[in-house]
Image (cartoon, rainbow, N blue to C red; front, side):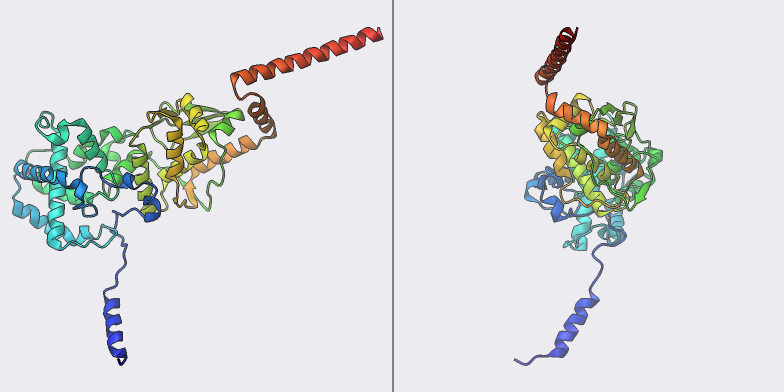
Length: 416
């Protein structure tokens, strides 16, 4: 068979014409990279409800589709918006929100518009019913606490999002003719109020891309600390090593932001963390968002990296639980240690770290390297591991002193 170079060249030219950058500036919703996802698939996969195109059609999530459609119908009736205007608005925005997703979507325009219509109308109706007391008694999604909690956590997953600007546009379209002065952001804050760790006010929110982005913002402080280029935390003693060297952990009672740390004298002040079943899911998705989107503002990753250094074994967890830095609702301390150590697997740390974390880390390393504290640490490690060993060591020291005194007295008697 003869080789037709012209045909091959034409085919390659056509292929190159269709080339486009896989990730563009509008992108904000990502599939979690396989290298990270493989360590805990369930942490990134919705359990009861799919939102957006990435998990649409999954067999395990089909049971909720009827509820989503029912909510969509209820929202249209509540908003007094015609279906034509609602669909028309989504159709107009389709090229823009399609670009928000990191991977090529295999859905046609018609299919994607339908997915976004049902999912957005469902979310808006869910928020309305949650915010308006008395409207949620007849609704399965809100009246059954386990299901409500599962939906809430599914709405926080990075792969399970719709762009917030789409929700905002549809909300504005639906209520512009009604006397309803409650904003979508107000309803969103109310629905996710349990996660608002920093007690942020809506006025502090400039812009959010989606709900995962909002939850990350809830864990940050305002203003954000500065960052230092060219520095990373290379080493940090564990909680056990620091405790043996004489350091004391103290909870920052008045500080709700995770980023706040303070070290002075022999005391490290650190915010309290409640460790419960969804904790791993929340942190994994916030870290995944930073890995994909906030390369130079990875504040949550800084915090997780700091914890990963502090916690190596269940003994480290025991110390932090005793000092109330951790509130352990998982039960055994081994589970807490495994969870924290697993969060940083295959996570890339940038050389652009929070100045606050870097400064505290440097001070802690200097504290632990102090020769006197190393000696104290060695003595505690070798002779004071437990109450019985400590008592035995003290008794041995007392006997040694008494023996020395007796020897001195015997020598003095011989001399005099």
